[in-house]
Image 1 (spheres, rainbow, N blue to C red):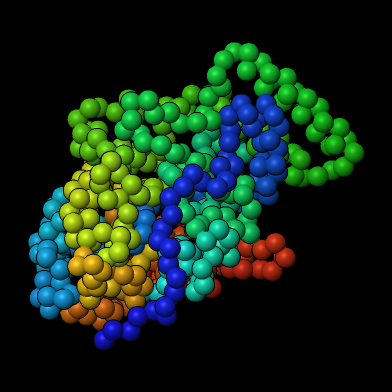
Image 2: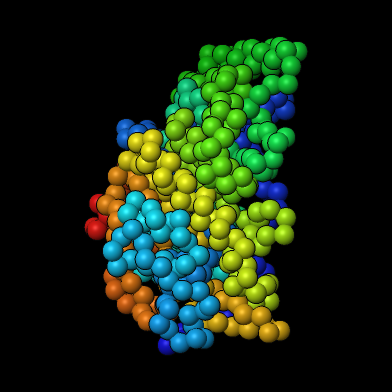
Length: 454
């Protein structure tokens, strides 16, 4: 079998400064009244679920090979299996790639889905299909048709008086976003390398006392304007907007956000367990954020240290895919294993669901360019690793065929995966959202969580 997706032009996953860093709580936004537009967009937030749950998405930007991670095929023909073997895990009968020895040791804390498949052929369409539950088959790099699950969570859980953002993107996922919900539900942006000695999170502090004074004067003026408007018209969104102003000012002028992002509060030994790398320290920060009360943290693994191939888009034209995996695997394996174990050690594994995935798998049959091996896009089969969330761990769900080309047991869709995520978060996927024209869209058009997990 070699049924590939329709040919499509793929420029590869991009990495650039986020196009819209709109969640700007610092002086420039608040003192210049630029915060008004953002908070107006949030004034109609829906009631939050009562469950105290959170999610960390570990996103392998570009699409990781399932054969070199969680679904090795050591008995397949040479043109499929690749150079790496398979190793036993802490779950009897479950094997990972030999590149994942640390995750193999904590596999009993994980559940592996090996049979997810979809039809999104490129990075944007694959991500948008997987994370929205609405199939996307054409390239829409900057304008997704539907919001991703984490921006939806921002809408559902946004509440006045919150001291921390609902959703933090470190950095935000490319090709994704709030779509018709509007930019007010985009994630709070964290860029840069948390492992760098001079790392700072922008927009969670005021630079000096004079700046605080200017902010206070402008907010008093803004409050006076809103008071006049309340006298002229009874609008519920005006009252809600005032509460959002207070939340934003609390975030800028308080200490809770700064403390949550401060890795110096962690013991050196724990930081070493995650690895003193960008990926490792970003996942440690993600744990700090969900522990402090952030509902969703999306971590995009793209680019690591200088000289390391951090792009998971392993076409032969990009690099030797097997050398690239050998470079990035130890950093990735260490960071993910540390995160899963750390959450369990702190008793957070019921509250927090960890998801490790990319937009699709890679072609089981190895391709070549200029003598280099590679694997191309393959949405027909992919693996998703889950940990925690109060779900049933220590199992593999579904299976692919002997070459890893297609689901052979328990085929599952992005909707099955997302319904399980929403079940954990306490979100009713039957809730209807409305696009800019007023048309209703359910969060998911069909919704049943994966029975083996719940």
